[in-house]
Picture 1 (cartoon, one colour):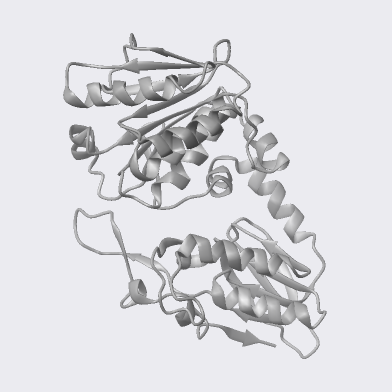
Picture 2 (picture 1 turned 30 degrees about the vertical axis):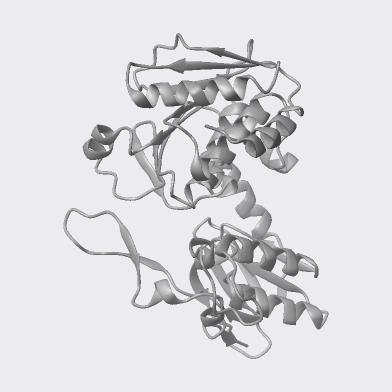
Amino acid sequence: MLDANLKAQLKSYLERVTQPIEIVASLDDGAKSQEMLELLKEVASLSTQITLLDNGDDARKPSFSINRPGADISLRFAGIPMGHEFTSLVLALLQVGGHPSKASVEVIEQIRSLKGQFSFETYFSLSCQNCPDVVQALNLMAVLNPNIHHVAIDGALFQAEVDDRKVMAVPSIYLNGEIFGQGRMGLEEILAKIDISGAERQAEKISAKEAFDVLIVGGGPAGASAAIYAARKGIRTGVAAERFGGQVLDTMAIENFISVQETEGPKLASALEEHVKQYDVDIMNLQRATALIPAKNVGELHEVRFESGASLKTRALILATGARWREMGVPGSNNTRPKACASARTATAHYSRASVWR
């Protein structure tokens, strides 16, 4: 299944593995099981650290777990992780095999300290470009914390489950049998939803910050641009965003951003964040604004309150909240679609969506 070039690349990655890996496949007599077994044999042949067993008894067939002997790790792929999910497979092998994650020390410790039982299921499609972010985040959490379990499920191979749960979009994430979220979600966003105490601590830290000279609400291209211009003037600048990058994160093909012939939304969002971080800007991510209390008199401070319970004060306020997805309103549908023309908006359109309070 893997061509010579891909095998060579994977073999070089697997040289970073420092701990033994055990892959346990649950198979039936179907063609997809044979296809999965062929893939797993090729993967196992590339590293002496990998052992492949085909005696698994999981109810979902074909599927396979990736384990570390002696460790309590619950990570499973129900389906054949090729296409966009091949990277998810490679990262899972590396992380189970002891290669360190690029996540920050604070985030890793937050994951390890989570209490309770978290059983995640993610429905993905091999053609879905947003799915790998979710799959990789939850796989890492399962590697780091034995209380966290994750199964990544290819909906095309388990159509009965998809129909029974009325899954209408991918990625669709379930936690302990209940819908948890849909669409692109990063590691920190998932953590904020399940670690209430961590979110509360973060809200307290934010509320304790001194007043800003300029506070930008919104982390899309408009907010990033405003932050850079403000910080270059040497004034105390903050950005509070529900998701840094905004709706650009959900836009794959961007072809009307001046000076850039073609790019992808996540790549542009990452570049925007790196550019903002070149300056002394305080970025507060995963903060959804819920209320604005304008200053009553000249010289007083504006206040912005957030869903997390945090609040910030500022001398000048820039609102760059951009566009938002909304419910279709069709009975029986839980899918989302953008407001009129929002799917056609890309980076340049967001620059006109900022307003200023002084």
